Length: 283
Image 1: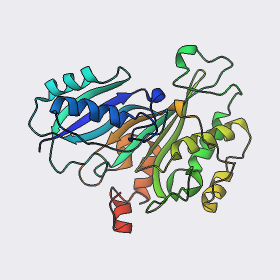
Image 2 (image 1 turned 120 degrees about the vertical axis):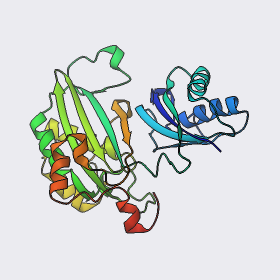
Image 3 (image 1 turned 90 degrees about the vertical axis):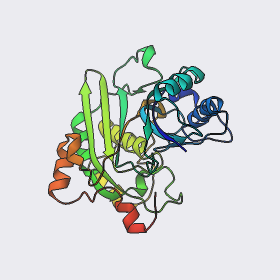
């Protein structure tokens, strides 16, 4: 069966997340319904990963197998005609049969947006976390430095007892940028636990407010216990920004970040598939 790679953008406000859920409408469900209507048979779409309820995506990647070959441009137009306006396929191409949107991903980048001012513009309501208290950017950046590298991130997972092979992840870069009242947290890594990026953002916000010392990040990591010191930031500020695929050894420095270059120099980056090699299982 021909396999197709799809790039999607969506506003996650109205959806229960990417994955099909029994108690809500998901992005995956909408995509599969559109594909099935065109193919005239059930279709399964496999995403690069799950986004939670209310989380947005700029470049989510999925793959799907169809019963017969389709011209990618025709298929893309047809799918978009059947999708709701808050979900769009922005690129579609024939893929190798061995391509897998989740297993072949070598890195993911999320961006979390904060409006740090007294009044949030109403047209940003769905897409920004509003923090009225002035944030200390230096403190946030200091805390972020403690959270880069390869660690057990159990303390930054919303449900650390959720059954996963390992809670060890590599964060290549965790950067805090500021332009006027808008702050942007960029998190790039080989993978993220359930609500991990929102937990990282929540902790950085607390550090910026002065509620926690930036240095406590190291102690929290070492504890491997989720506590109230790590709040989960609201979903509306989070975007899945991009998913990367590269043959062989994908290096963090390809993202142009100082933290990633340092990890390569010090040997902390083990390359894609490191967790699978450690556990003997595919993630």
